[in-house]
Image (cartoon, rainbow, N blue to C red; front, side, top):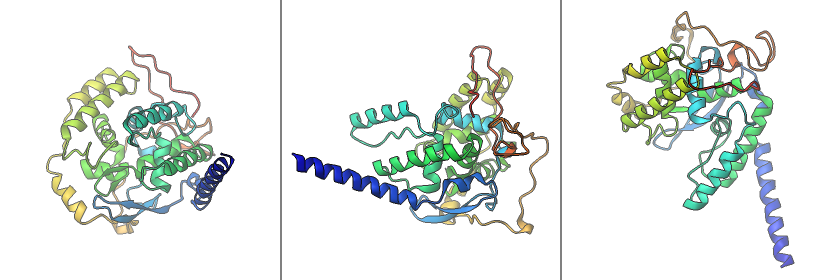
Length: 319
């Protein structure tokens, strides 16, 4: 019995040492705090092939936080991680519920990943569903919360998240689906893109399950109304608005055959400037002014929504 316990202990130590070494070889999280920092990661297309993807301002579709509508940020937060401004990178209660569910189903289907964990996975890890990857993901998410502001994390998340076949990031997604920059997205369009996030390849692929995506986007709009992100008139207008996404199936087919190039454009290829009149959110990330630290416009949290008449909602002060 003593030998068995010793072998188990040695196996655990070796396993933890392996995780520690692999994490030590991961690029430093602190580099992401620099808003001018760009790096290249590998993303997998819908055929399983890998392609380089630029993360940072060198990506032609990169959209700084100040140009992402507050409605887009809140749509994602309310739908994907309602405790985003409360947790330190991972949600213990959600993880416990996920473990219980996976044990009952004898699978690893439910991950309980926060937005920070998803960002860590997208930037540093693979998509494999293993305990090892999950442990690495939790640790990296915790490190990101120590090094980065919440606003910077949501900015990174929205710029790398998958929204279609080789369509990554809100800047590319908004132009791909709606032919406009992210700063011009309407609340309905924000909810539509956020609705795709759980499974843009299959379950929430708008070309296969448009009704399912629209139904979830309606749910997201209701959440935005309940939490005061939208007032009643904005909510009603969003609910009756129609999305112009007809005829884009051929775009999907073309994108799968010829993945887009993500290198920085030349001066002759520069994207037209964002339309005027889109005010950036206030620099309220950590109590710092826009002149210093990480509390500037480009990493600030979206403006705190005003409480709806029927629901009291006070966004957490700690951001």
